[in-house]
Structures are given as structure tokens and as C-alpha cells.
Length: 565
Image (tube, rainbow, N blue to C red; front, side, top):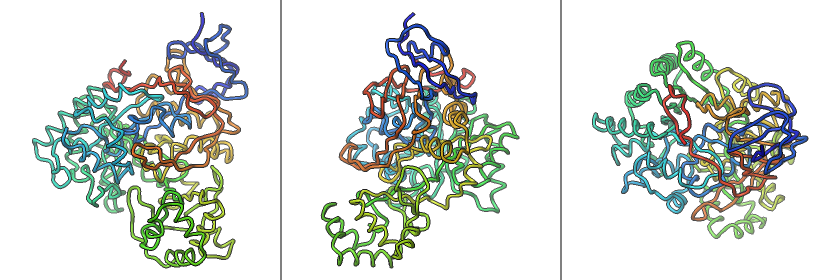
């Protein structure tokens, strides 16, 4: 017998949490055919001596709904070992959409998720109206990684209500229209239904996105439909309730999850104990709820080549008005530089949203001098030099030929609390937001960050434990039964990497989106290969051009959510 692929002599970590074993892995027809000693030859042979061999990583929270149409490789995710993603989160999708109302879907996404409207206009085919037709369109495009897609509440409301979705409550006819399309979407293979109720999600004109107009009874009715169909997960994001309202809200959510039988996915990224307690309460009632954690704190990047917190100030906007090179020349001029620093130092900054640079908090803003911590804050650099923080940022720009990046977390980052959340039962390390916030984030690298920082540098997790967190744990939470562990008969989605060198690379800025829109690009080091369905898609950090990825379609849970062929 000759196999399509044989990986030899690697240290196999199968994703179950079991200890590594040295073994060969053979692949045929996109599936794992044998693990152990493999004397037969493969059409393709990879010597993995000195490397670990793991399942491909699964990312449960992305926004690659538009990117899938213009980026067959699935960057940046593919460079960090991700082989399967779930998109359509936070209520944002580009389907369903009426033929004359593409702008309504874009309106909810553009500012909230920092996805360029021009890029979507140039790069998305818009050859669908229903969500089922959207899934068929994804099925047709070449893909190097696998995609599962939720249907988003904002798009669903716009489909049913048009412009009224942004200003009104749904009436009975609107709700019936939403329920009909949701049912059709789930039958066609939508992985779940998602919504947003947070004030941070706004349209370009400062109005709430469509899902935020919904009464909670509307959301409940849609979740109950999912329960009746025994299909789909429910992911949502909302602002934390007040202390006075917390007990009632948590009871409401826990009881709904238990009553409907629908698995709930919530955020658990801040280190707060509230999500952990809510998960425990839900499970005590017989419901299913999973919290998504983040290993370094959600934050935004800024740079001289992209945007800075000071760009909202008229003097800085004028300095940038004539292009990047002229802006740099002005910063090199001492008189102009000192004037701009003085303006930024004394300015008052307003709250910002979406892709806008956040007001500076120099005690939290870190200088990305290396891919993983420790990082000095701008305040610390300024203190070391005896200068103002704004001046320190400009000096760092001049010293790096304006290549330096800064990153500022949304809130103070408590490492002890975050580790507690990552180790808590009922949580999964994910929440990359890949495909969104592309001008100021690149959190596909949270997977390599976990390996480089929390495993290698801090020893908070064993390697086997960390691999499980990125493979079988999300597979179980999202209901992927055919992947997430290395086992005979399951999907041959595989990573081969050096645990001693795997890490994120430093980010760079590119203008490679459709229409020339910008995004942050971040690759990784330490990977020998990433394999999807038995084909090598990334080798030595470079995409091979192979596109064996698939659309993964959900089915009713009582059919074990098998993937449609």
C-alpha cells in the first residue's frame, strides 16, 4: 500500500491531552490512515525528526466572511497553524442580503469590524441573496483552510426589515421572515446564529448596528427556533450588566441555554470571574456554555505607517495630508516635530470605535520591540529617557525608520486573572477576530503566542495541554466531530513545528486588500509545514498555493453535526 503522505519520526501530540509519542503519520484521501510505524512509502514524505506533529488549530471566532473571496490562502491565520475557522460572529455577515441592499450589510460591518467597504465592493462577488446561496458561493471558491459560517443577526434583520432594521423594533411579520430565513440557513449548513448588543458596535454614521435594536424577546424567539431544529450554536457579545442587574441577567441566560438546548458561546477575555461563574451556573442547569479566552489581552496596534492616536488632531491630520513620505520629512524637521509633539501632549481625546486609533494610555501602550513579551510601555521608555511619552513615541519612530509598532490593550492586562480564565473548565483559547480590525490588529498570532510565551517562556502550560486547547477543545465546543485530534479516519489537518522556535513574527503593514486598502500582516516562525486534508498548504512559512480547504456545513446535533460532502 502506498500512502499519499507520510510524516516520519515526529513527536506526535494527538490533541487529546495525551503525552507526546514518536511515531509516523500516514495519510490517504485527505484522512489519517495510520499512526505508528509506517514501513510503506508515501507519494510525499516529510521528515519531522526534531519537530512536533499536532492537529491543525481551530479558531472559533473570526470575521473572514468577505476575505474568503479574495484570499485563497487564508492569511494571516494559515501562517499560525490554523486549519479551520468559524466566521460570522458578533451578528455580522454579508448574507442574507437583498439584491438592492448590499449597503445595509456593509453598513453594520464596516466600522464595527474595520473591514474596508471599498475592499468588499471590489473583492466580494455578491452572487447571492439568501444565506444558503452565500454558502454555495463559499463552496465554489478555492480555499487553503476550512471554513464554517454562522448567520449574523444584523444581516438577518436587514434582510427582513430593510432600513427599518436600524431604527425600529421588529413586528410579527418581520420576526416570521427572520425565523424562516434562519431555519433555511441552518438546514443549508449554517454553523450557528450570532448577535451583538454592545455599544462598541456602531455604523459609520454613529448609529447602533441593526442587531442592537432588537428586543431580547426577538433573540429568544430565534434561539428557541434553533432549539426546535436541534441545530446551531449561539454566539453573542454584550456589555457587562450592572452589579444590580447581574444576577437576573445571568439567570436569564443560563435558563435560556438550558431550556433551548442550544450551545452558547460567550467572551471571557478580560480575566473577570463573571463569565466563569455564568458558565458554571449554566452547566449546573444542564445547559452548554463555552467562554472564549485570549492569551494576551485584546488590544489595537498603531504605527507611523498606519495610524496613531494623534491623527484625529487637526495639526496631525494636516501633517499627514500630503502623503506618508512628506509626513516623515515633517517629523524629521525639529521645529515641526516639536510643534506636533506639543499639540499631542496637551490634547483632549474623544472615545473612538471600530478601526479608529484609541486615545493614548501610555501606561498600557507597549512598544513591540520583539514578537512576545516582555515589552516596555511607552511610559517606561519616556521615563528612562527623561522625556514626554509623545516625544518618546516620535523618537522611536525616527530610530526605526518609522517601522515600529505600538500595541495598547483595551483594559489593564492581569496575567494572573487571564491564566485563571484560560485554565478554567468551560473555556477555550480563541477569539482572534481574524479578517476584522485588519488595520490595527493581527490576533491570528494568539496561537503562536500561546506556544512561545505561555508554554516556552512562562511554563504555565505543558505543550500537550496547549495543543489540546487549540485543537480538540474548540472542536468539542463548536461541534466538529471529524477533526481536532490525530486519529485514524479523521481529517488530515496537521501542523509540524519546532516547539523551541515557534513564535509570531513582528508585524508589518501591507496595502494588499482589494482596492489597495491596508492591513497588518503577521507571519510566524518555527513551522516546517501545515497540512490541510492531506495536502501541504504552508511549507517553511510560505504558502504553497494548494487549496484543499472546504466549507464545513452544520447539521442537526442528533446527526452528530457531520460535515456535508
